[in-house]
Length: 223
Image (cartoon, rainbow, N blue to C red):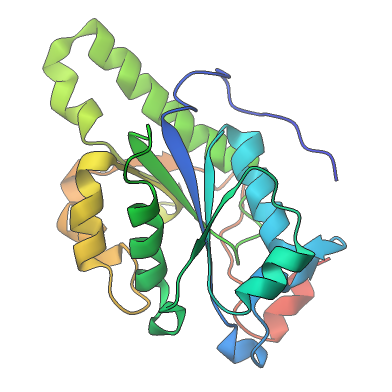
């Protein structure tokens, strides 16, 4: 499968925004089939998600693994990705989000763009739009220092017909708060609700579909 970069301004903001892919789930409702290893267009689903992040503009990509992590490493081609083990993956998505954000400490990343492995309908166009919104805020800051807080503390979320979804971008100043609020399978939901007035929304419903692969019926969506 060939992919192309689709970010409108290659090289801008991509180095400072890390892609963070949550791919640790065990697929309990799928009979214990890890979602990262589900086959889509002949390759593991985790590969497609990584390509979406890269083609959308994320140069640095961290992938959080959990269920059958050794098998994912052996079967999936994930070149130049930082692979993060989450030994607590059975506790839910919140544990993976915490592990992923912790792995970004000490890097040059100023923001993390979070994507879920089980949403193959979300591709590079949605990633690029969220990154473009971040880049636009950065440009606004460079032109007007009154926007300093808005840019340094970005919270940006894709929406689908007005409903918030992924990708979601968190500025680094939010990471500690997001991690503290991430419990069970809620991920960042509680934190985003608490800071709803600060979240910039980017409609992506015309370029992506935000369905999940959660049940055996959902497998029909995979090619």
